[in-house]
Image (cartoon, rainbow, N blue to C red; front, side, top):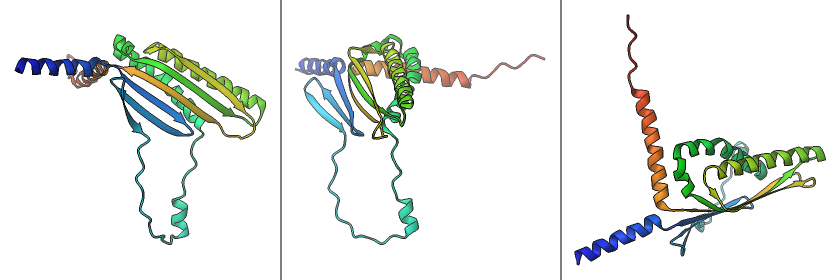
Length: 208
């Protein structure tokens, strides 16, 4: 009886380690939604978190100085935020690929759809912004495809001359096995420890 229980536990552990996990991320109207699907069937929503109903609070009088401090700062333009993120991918992914090596090929981007709206007061400004956006977007795709597997990549940039404000929408689906994440974590930990211990080694004293 004990052998059957042990075999069942080992089979369950193997299923949890090798069954693909799907991570679905959607950025739309400046709201991020993240859903994780376990064993192809069970969706778990991570973001946005469910809002708890707030109890009505009594209005308190505030001084003008305090009211100015509590004013919300204007949010950054969504398109510029997206372009900054793409630039970060261009900078970091090659280094991550060097650390992880072939282990990173176990991560699959099955869908990546990005649409940006860049604004400009003049036609030449909008054209320059579109060129910069295309360069960053396809540079990020090149860096991504060099590290992980990419099945679908769709990238569109649209100019806007009227509203004066950009926009960004994105849908990304990533498939990965937990055993791949565990192996990647072990490799990164090994490199961190190697670097840390290398810094601690005493340097040989110069001969007199």
